[in-house]
Amino acid sequence: MNIERVVLFVAGSVVLISLALGTWVGQAWFLLTAFVGLNLIVSSLTRFCPMVMILKKFGLKHGSPFLKDPVK
Image 1: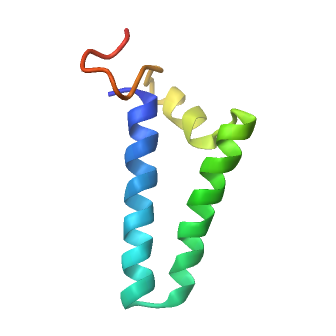
Image 2: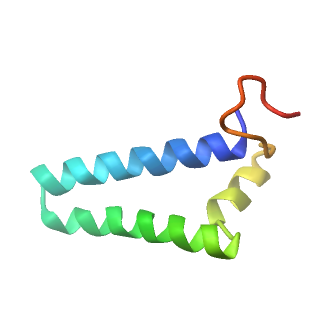
């Protein structure tokens, strides 16, 4: 698994979980959904993502998230 796949998985999971919590627990959880979306936009414009830095420290490598055989 590479950094890009983990970032996509975590962002998607947080969005879905926060949408569920916002629907069934309280509307304040929708702020988490907005935060994730804003972070994705800012990361695409600035090429800076704190999660990428954390994943690098765990030893994950960059690669294409859409290839069957990840780039090594």
